[in-house]
Length: 296
Image (tube, rainbow, N blue to C red; front, side):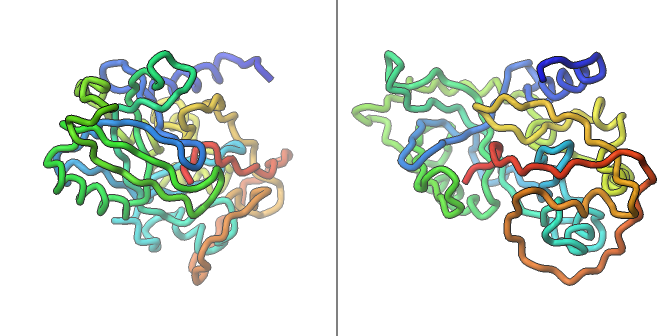
């Protein structure tokens, strides 16, 4: 359905604004779709001190899978975060276990056989990787000295949807016969005043998270003003997530609802007593898991 009301438009506008950097330049998400796909990039990192990490939960909001930061230090899956407790109470439910993530700012050009140059125009993006990927980038920094000053070749190893997909990052020499330094100018102004927490995930308070666990939706103020980005990657069009419906009349918290398709999560010893849902006459639809925003 393509129609929407004024309140929904405000949410769409907030999400679009949250995906822009401080100077108004749109920053997208890096994604190679299939085995053997490549991209040329400059990585906006000069030392390990600039690495950006966050502990993230994936959870269903309005039928879409979103990212919300974990409230526990270093994402230790402890009782200090209501989302951690919810996952421990129901590991196969709609709140994922906390995962440590790394966010890599880059300028990228994708291979495009339909382009006159063979590659797409340069765009600023963020690459979402497991935190362990930082070791590889640390090694590349040791080799290159400063990743802003060199081009790198990024290759996907794994077919679309393959959970075992890996990526290789190769530093290219300045005298490479094909990939010249001027292919991607070292202009990182798109990342001036850039805030990763307003781009790649939501930051919520304990009170806002408890409201979500009880009702299936975050408070309206948080939806309109917090402006944390929905996890929709480049090449997707579903940037707007419709508001979730109220929780069912039965005393079952919204987070206990299982999505249509489940990923396998390690079991944890239940240590959380789920809150009873507020009475309602409507029914929360079972969310359909959407992997469009995940890089496998």
